[in-house]
Image (cartoon, rainbow, N blue to C red; front, side, top):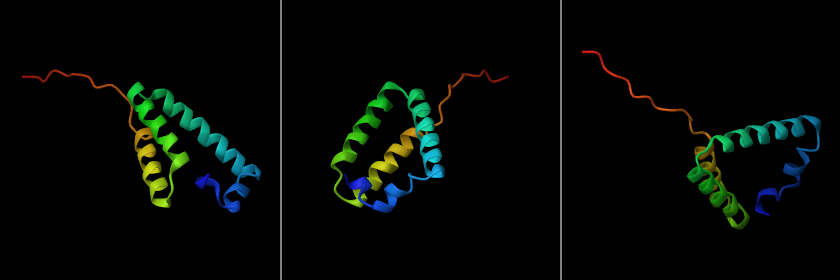
Length: 85
């Protein structure tokens, strides 16, 4: 897989700090996914599938950017407010 070609990349997660960072990152991503709409989840799923077939660093970066935009959305509800006269 193109994402983990570098042995340095794999080695970073063997130490305790790297493992802790990875564990925290996965927890945050799972939390963000749970807050997404069904449509956004479907879009994210398609992007993840695209990582398996991405052929260039530019493809990977484009997918990563799109995934980050989806996961970084501010979730909340809009409320209609009446304006005073």
